[in-house]
Image 1 (cartoon, rainbow, N blue to C red):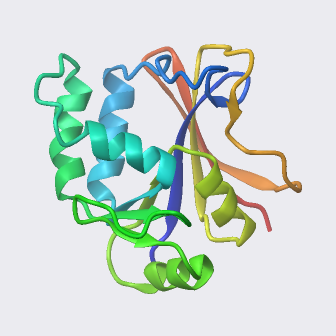
Image 2 (cartoon, rainbow, N blue to C red; image 1 turned 90 degrees about the vertical axis):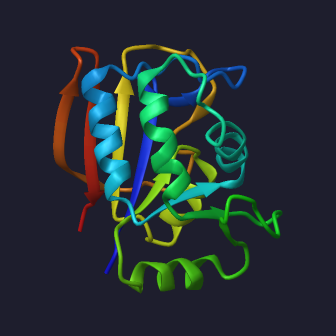
Length: 185
């Protein structure tokens, strides 16, 4: 059975966006970039909520002029990897993406039962919260960056308590830290 891995960047104070929606603070140093690319290469599909999908589907088809080495390396991986969008409002998506709107639990459980690589849920908090509520996320990979945003969108919206068990950690580039968790119990 495939796993769903939630891969997210956060500030030290627990936000994925700043107070004005800014996401200009994660730094992809060489070590973090290499890990991110390896994780992406292994993915059987990328999973996004609507908001992150709109950003990704706008940006990644056209990054050839990027000065950023990580972006140039990720673009071909993004293009060839199947994509799934979790949305109650979209009926279709470009770039060959599949949209799951109705019966989130049933359709995502069916995806997990299919053969293939793990499903990499990237960024966003609403889709992750919905999948967490139904016990569908198998692993949380949180990259903590050395910045305090002082507010914004939290990685985990206020919900019931969720007990997690640390299964690994790793530092990157002398700056950011990966915390890998699974559900406890």
